[in-house]
Structure formats: structure tokens, C-alpha cells
Amino acid sequence: MARILIIEDNPANMKLASLLLRNAGHTVLCALDAETGLTLARADQPDPILMDIQLPGMDGLAATALLKQDPATAAIPVIALTAMAMKADQEKSQVAGCAAYVAKSLRYQELYAAIDTLLVKGEPQAASAANPFHRTP
Ligand code: MN
Image 1 (cartoon, rainbow, N blue to C red):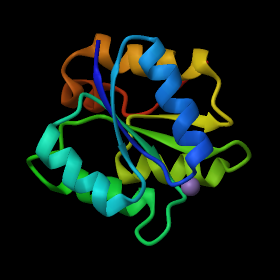
Image 2: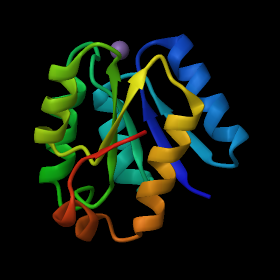
Image 3: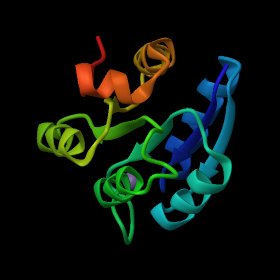
């Protein structure tokens, strides 16, 4: 099972994502803003990061770009949490370096599938070189 960092400012979404992931046996770390999330990512080296795109202050795209520029965090796969209808967010998240995205409102099957796909791949950098963006079913 994985250690998963969730960066999400909406308390209801955070609660739901944490619950779903803990129920699946994962360990969950939570950050309500990008700055806290970046600090936790460096300190705790989570397996994947679930990154809300729309955050107050620094948004999820900028935070992902910083994670990818930092050698300490570049290998951590980032799964973007995007608003359901925001195709533009999904494309931008790919450009910023996200390995996958899950559209909100969260459906647990999609969330589990995105995480399983990344964990099975094992080596995140090899996975991103081969196919940087996996649409979850
Ligand atoms: Mn948000």
C-alpha cells in the first residue's frame, strides 16, 4: 500500500479522498494549500501526490511544476484532481508534469485505478517517458 499526499483546499473533497484512500489501505498525508504540500512532499517523500488544480495562492499546476523541477521530488508521480468539465485543466496538468488526472467529483473506482496504475509501473520516470499521461477509464 502507498503513502499518499493529498493537496486539496476543499474540506469536503479532502475528507472524501482521505476516507476512500484509507479504506483502500493507504496511509494519507493532508495539506490544505500548495506551500504546505510542497514542504510535506520534500519531508515525507509520498508515493504519489493527489493534487487539486484549483488552490488558493499557488495553484496545483504551479506546485506540480515546482515538484518536477526539484530533484528531491521530481520522481514522485502527481495525479491531478480536476473539475469535471475542465478539459483545459486536464491538458494543463499534463504539461505541468502530472502523470494522470482524476476528475472531481471523485469516483472511487477512478481514484483507485489511477493510483494502482502508477504503483504497478514502479519506476515513475520510466513510466512518464513512455506515456506521460494516462486517462483513467
Ligand atoms: Mn480547490
